[in-house]
Length: 243
Image 1 (cartoon, helix red, strand yellow):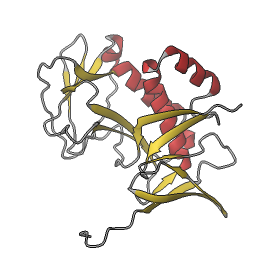
Image 2 (image 1 turned 120 degrees about the vertical axis):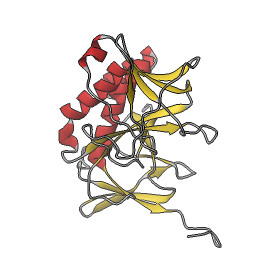
Image 3 (image 1 turned 60 degrees about the vertical axis):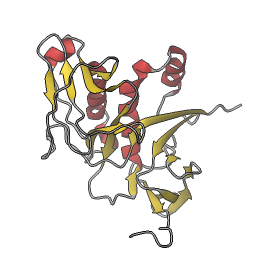
Image 4 (image 1 turned 180 degrees about the vertical axis):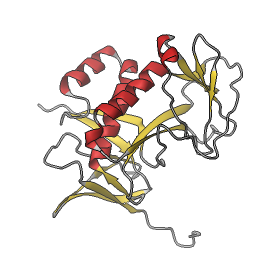
């Protein structure tokens, strides 16, 4: 019997703007991180594994950039005044954050040696850490399948250390991003009424959640090339709603 494991990696949202690893958002601001009990944090070493994976598997999306963003887990959480520091044995390094939550992840060997942490001035589990691979020249409602495959590999490299041992073993053995028995869902780039996967003259509908906010691309199916694209159809604007 075929078993489908659904891995909803919320950090794989795809409506972010590309931020190069060597660029700082022009309007980014540095905000100090004051003391906070049980703050949100991420292992710097785990995040760098994502950078390493992006470089090692860049052939999946040769022209793409990797971006990082912070996203609120609920409407009650605000990113206003959010601050991020790289904390190791040396003095903490404040990292600039754009108004949309975008930030650059620098490479720092000293921080790696110290097993440093990225620490936010927000409560634990109130923020999602988003990593996105995005090729240039595509409209917001179109996603390249190779970008999705690389996004999955980057996020698996970052998140697998936090996955329960049994699930981690199953995913690693099967291939977290390459097995037909593991369903990886992504956030849709726009509120969606439908989505179609196309590759040349071939096209099929893509499975969506009922609310149109998540979808399951066939990452494992190598009959679809990396240059295949997923096109999303926007939900119709309600009558009387402002355009």
